[in-house]
Image: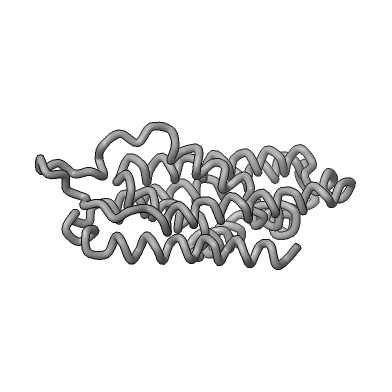
Length: 205
């Protein structure tokens, strides 16, 4: 596929741009450490894979037939980001090191971080724009269009997974005393940024 390398370059730039997904992984690392950060990254990548399947199944056709669906997804996405942002703003500051000397961030995370990443990505209007406007520009006429959407979607998902897992692993290696100093401020900044993304999404409706 001649367009693969150009697509990988554009997709990498898109993924590396700071956005709500990055804020969610940051929040998970702050509250649950490495396990939570990686689980959130896996949830985000799973959502991306679901969008690739939807794109191959004719997402653009469905949205053309029912434009109200896009509006609903955008409102749901904005509302979800507001909820997460408010939770980040209201989260009480807790030391990363427990009184017994253990790292609080490594204590059980459950499936909540994964679901948070998955739901956020599924409700992310940017995914709709990507799969209905940008990705089709890299589809050539020589092969089956649906197969190309799946292939490019798989490449995009791998880029998403690689970046956010790497970010979660690297950020979680910072020593707990460092996080103790920056966690309260960073948590509130994260909340404000997430709410800002939600407001921007709603303003486009």
